[in-house]
Amino acid sequence: RVGANIPTMTDEIDIPTEPRAAVDALATHLTATADRPVPPATNRWLGEAEAVARDATSDDLDTQTRRKRVRQVATLLESADETGDVVADRHIEAAIECCQVILANE
Image 1 (cartoon, rainbow, N blue to C red):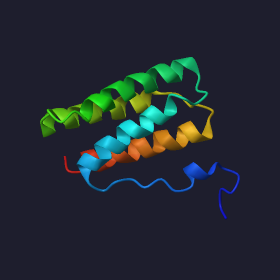
Image 2: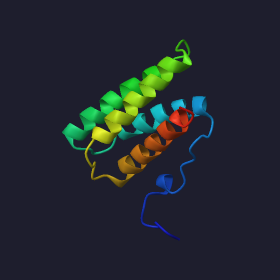
Image 3: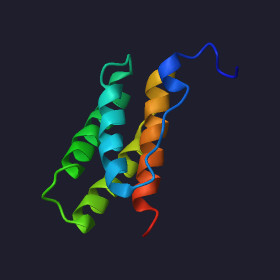
Image 4: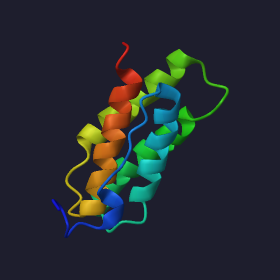
């Protein structure tokens, strides 16, 4: 099996195909990075991305504002450096994929 030495939870991460579900998954993946051993500078970018992603999950946002928040998250994730942690990296990859799902119709 490919990646047998990688922790099990990273083997299969399903990315929602429906944009609203992807917003929730985005916030969940970024929240999961908070407990990982990530360098402080990178952690600041991830923390800000997490806060914006959590805001994007708010039910009282219109679609345009939600998409704006997700674009902001995508920019923050692009700015973050390597984490050095395979689990955190996989959650970041999944978060980026969620952003792509949400923003695909632009």
